[in-house]
Image 1 (cartoon, rainbow, N blue to C red):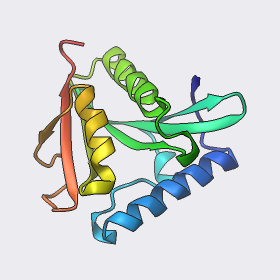
Image 2 (cartoon, one colour):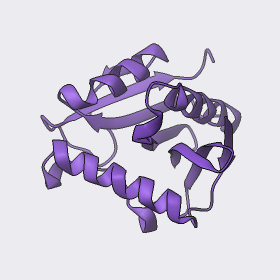
Image 3 (cartoon, one colour):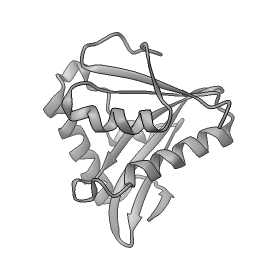
Image 4 (tube, rainbow, N blue to C red):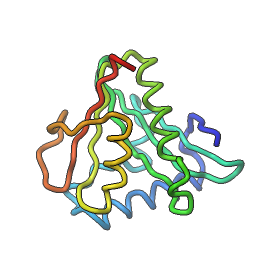
Length: 154
């Protein structure tokens, strides 16, 4: 598996992000979806990575800089055909490593709630993320779960 910084120009990446947004819409009401579309992922302060097996796109993830000490995990998605192969773990490990190199003290994330999101909750907990309250512009929402990871010991 090869993980690369991506410029979001490929059609396969656009298709995976469309799948990601459709999945969010399937399990959360529109006002509770905080996933970023392609133009939003291209804004300054967001870095994006994709995982590949040769020419096959396996998954993606992004890191948004909130401030000099904090980053936010965004757009974590594994292509359906590659679930259970360790793609999300590999991408998350890369995002954490980049955050540590950038000197962030904490990583935060917002994800959905309910059974469809339990695999994501388990993944994040496996990496040491713990539940926390809303951060930034987020508000308490029964369809959202907020998590954070302290990076000082990484």
